[in-house]
Image (cartoon, rainbow, N blue to C red; front, side):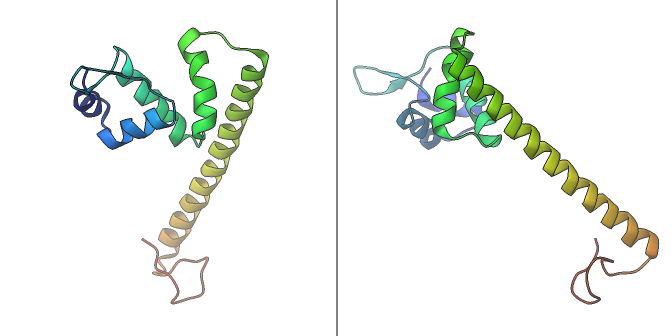
Length: 129
């Protein structure tokens, strides 16, 4: 697949694909004309890379994790890294859930009070939506 095809199917820019190559997260070959060619499965790999980035993994961590995804095998050190990243994501999810719950409480209390201002802020500093 050419770079434009991968970008379109994965929903990313060609610039992003070049960045992934610079970070050694993707490989490509070159045609005699110098165009990048990607292997089958690259779109799925790009989506996986994006999921890892969205979860907060660094390029270095993703580079270390990808061989496990490719080979379906992991060294003990890689298993430790995977477990640490999973635990970090779990903590991040718990924190986000707590914020979501707090926002829900604020919305409910503001709606029930009929008060146009957020009950957690001094009057006039913020409006409830």
